[in-house]
Image 1 (cartoon, each protein chain N blue to C red):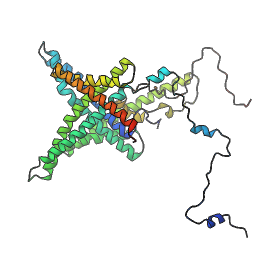
Image 2: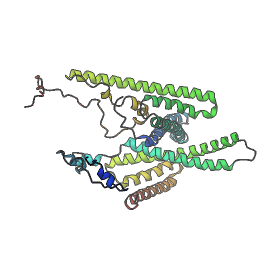
Image 3: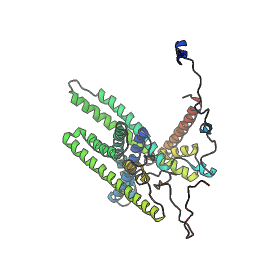
Length: 207
Length: 189
């Protein structure tokens, strides 16, 4: 299953982080979009003020929409983690579907079902992409390690957080994690030796 | 016939069974006691590195923004709930009442949440920025961030409004930080 997801907070605080991260993404992204739209739509000489007006009117709203989506998604995700007692991509997919449905519940059953299907598919795509990227990285590391002379790299365990991280990493992983060491999969990277002689093979005899 | 080994049990068959402390490691010659004697040496090899370990800007941002957004949502939602309940008219069906409550709590909640979320975002971004600039981690970062947040938030209303808002923000943040430190030191929670 890979190493457990350690870059995200444990479950209750995760909702805060995800809602805040989503709000930030929405506000900044929406701010940039409405900035350019405001510049475009304003008369010459008043472009910057028009752009700032557009940002002030629209960016909080866009951010709020993203934050609602992110917060509800994270709540469902945490609930599923609590119920199923494990972290895997299915949690994210089901949460995506549940979020999509929940946010359209007032529009009736048809809209709910459609929104749930779209949300679930969207998350499934993201999770699938994350798993594929994780497998590619693991393959690359295996190749590197074999080229450097090691045998039998522990396969799936070396990948780290491929499945469980993908659901949150597209939300939570976009912001810098500071000094978090880049988990390069297997911790046992062999160093390339300068000399052409092989290093002395360790023998297990008791001297 | 031999005495059963559990005679002790029958003897002291009162509520308090006599016990003795058992040290599971008493016969083992392993340095197990070291398990409970944790080293007080720092985790990091260099003092400079240790001094630099602090929250990353991303953690700061998501945490503060999330906190303020959810606080705004909960506060605004409850205020809206109250006003929605107060707007009930006689003869309303249940569906209509639920609709009123959802509408008003949703609207007020969203408005407050967006405003507070923007304030949180600005504050977190500024605090991380000032921290990165000054390369230290103390209360003046927060106060400067509060000043800046208030100023930027009210910048569109004019210079005087921005200055007043900045001062209010700085004072609020200073009070909050002092209160938090006081709480940690003097309140036995």
